[in-house]
Length: 242
Image 1 (cartoon, rainbow, N blue to C red):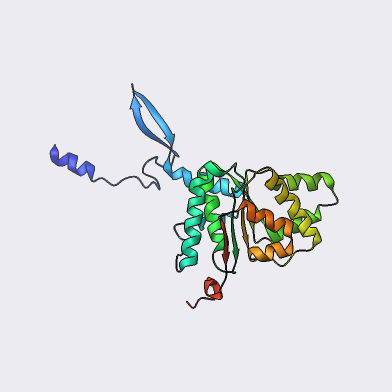
Image 2: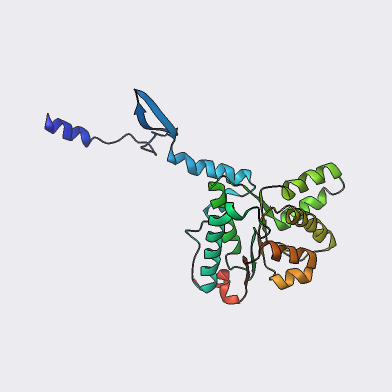
């Protein structure tokens, strides 16, 4: 009998991807008075996060931009990661304060978008849902709808009123008066209503102010103590010798 039990223990498991739920998505965690207690299996959490990521406007291919694979190879990237992790950790306590935002500015190729996306992914895990605003694409999209007041305001409000907004590559390629007007409308609303932003831009803080003082000064105030100016071609990982 003992030999039989040992053989049974060594029997191969069914060919399921997840041995906890047998690929059903639901696992039993305990049983009380013959009634099973069920919960969503751990294997489903990543799929839920991916769906939430897409709903927030992110390309699913960006979902690998995490803190864990953000490369630390100099003092600047060490500082970027620390500030970003602290921001996520403190977010629920600071989200209604005047300076509840964060900005990574300057050197192309330094990992600004990666670290911002890592912040967004961690916030989504906390059921806090950032909205993604890829600057070049969305500014063109908004201007194409500007003559249709109803549709324009509907699209604009999506970015003005969301819980947290990630503006990626702000003023990439420069900014004309129309671009500045649209961005001021979004950022001023968020500034007045204490709605946080996450910003990446190839412009340093001084250049943002030079481009438009009203926008630049608001960003710096909203991101007080969390505005990182990055400069130096040695930070551009795209130019690194492989």
